[in-house]
Length: 441
Ligand SMILES: NC(=O)c1ccc[n+]([C@@H]2O[C@H](COP(=O)([O-])OP(=O)(O)OC[C@H]3O[C@@H](n4cnc5c(N)ncnc54)[C@H](O)[C@@H]3O)[C@@H](O)[C@H]2O)c1
Image (cartoon, rainbow, N blue to C red; front, top):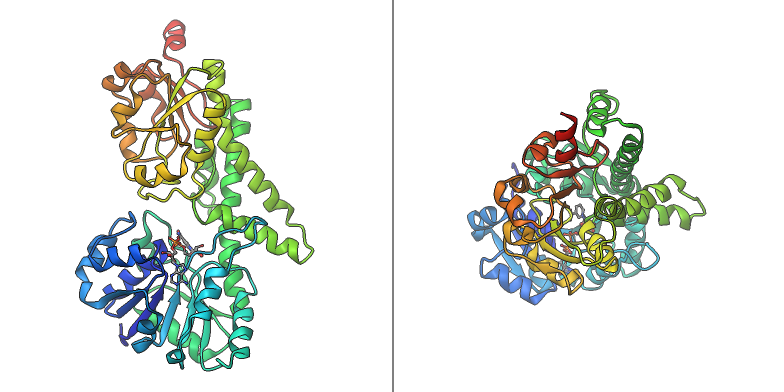
């Protein structure tokens, strides 16, 4: 990094903390401001409030370059670039809730003079222009505004920050755009500079496209089940076409997380607010909702009524290597199972704590995979933690009451599952039944 400077990060959740840790690693001093006192206190004590691989090490190694504060004045004492990473959750209408962004603008101190606000939070197209007008109306044309959407993925966020496919920097004042682009120059990544609205749209369109790919392959999987094709083979063959690519062609029980559901809905709403009906995205969302529920049908096909059944969910967070429970498929699944009269027991290697707050109270959360599967009539793999492959063990087989595994992420090898004595029900490929195969042999 040729110019190291003091950078402010406003909001230290998943995105903000990764950004702060990685900027500190690049040699910058980073002043982090959050409004959650317990979060700031934890970080000041050297504790890490989220599970994200690599972050604790980076925070520890760069501790002398990182400060955590509740006070906005502390940010602008030295920083002339302040990166906004506050949450932008959906409102009841599906539009993005920008109240946290507004709160940051409201809290800007006089000492922010000459600073550039960098919007890393995902916001609707038009937000930058609106914030610019608000700043101007308040006589703050001394404060710049640049859109710099974030594309990192939880679970691999540190690597994604360090080796991004691209960095997008959008703004209407070339000097400000240049200042922000310089922050990333040591990353050796392509930097796309553009106007504010286009930068905002690149983020929403990218997430909507990826979600479309997921819903597409999930529909292909559902048709594969009916026509006897294997979606894993189909996805592999499709992905070998360089125009399509392998990524995001993994069938499963639907996307979740804090980004895809909210960003796809926000883009659909944004279009709707202009009078344009984005029909494709309406279907992407509907397919995803139905996909989460398809597991119930698969369980009923094998077990009949789920009343009195004990169903074990392996994995609770929306993806492996994170404890983020926002919009996780497990929440819908657990609620539907309970509505069908089943009792639900679950295990997740890191998300148990957060899960307790969001899952129905009757869901039992076990301390280990073995404890979770004990006496279960069926196991559902909800999140593809690699360690769940160990479910195909004699211990698990002996501990379960039944032998059914519904693999919601196609994590397991079907042959190994059958060899271990399990009835194996994947997504978009043939179901396997050891007893039937024995008779056929
Ligand atoms: N999580 C992801 O994978 C991801 C990826 C790309 C983009 N994004 C976007 O980045 C933004 C942040 O996401 P996140 O997952 O880090 O959210 P988060 O909820 O984990 O973190 C947001 C943080 O902002 C703090 N905050 C709220 N208001 C504040 C204020 N006025 N001043 C200072 N701090 C404040 C909260 O206390 C919290 O710690 C969202 O817009 C999201 O859509 C997230």
